Amino acid sequence: MNRRISTVTLEFSHPFNRKLFENAIESILWERSVYDGSGNLMNLLRLKGFVHFVDDDCTYSLQGLNEIYDISPIPTERSKLLNLNGTRLILIGHNLCSSILKELLVNCTV
Image (cartoon, rainbow, N blue to C red; front, side, top):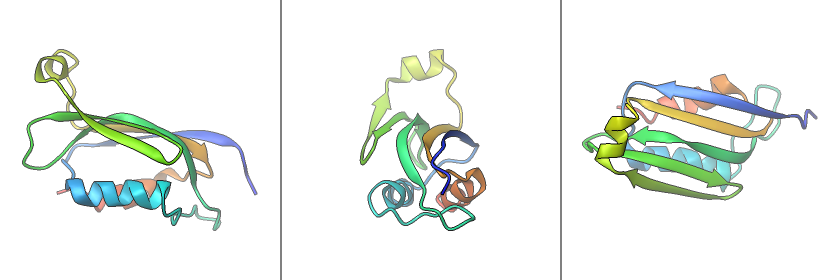
């Protein structure tokens, strides 16, 4: 088994359905039901980024460590100052497969 820690960065231009997005994140963190192409369980250690949800003008910060994650609004002024467009996620863990993670999450976009 490859226990090497790797980093995956994913970017999306379309907003997410919040419920579907949270379900996908929880399937990785809590249910541990996402596997790489070789059948190894993906083990997410750290998760961070910013995300946009459909029908919501706010940008949200996403932070996660092991099994805990938090989604918090970023003040509009700060979001504009940082030019946060789209969604960018950075995932750190074992056995991460960017194509499988991207497919899982793209199914949550609108």
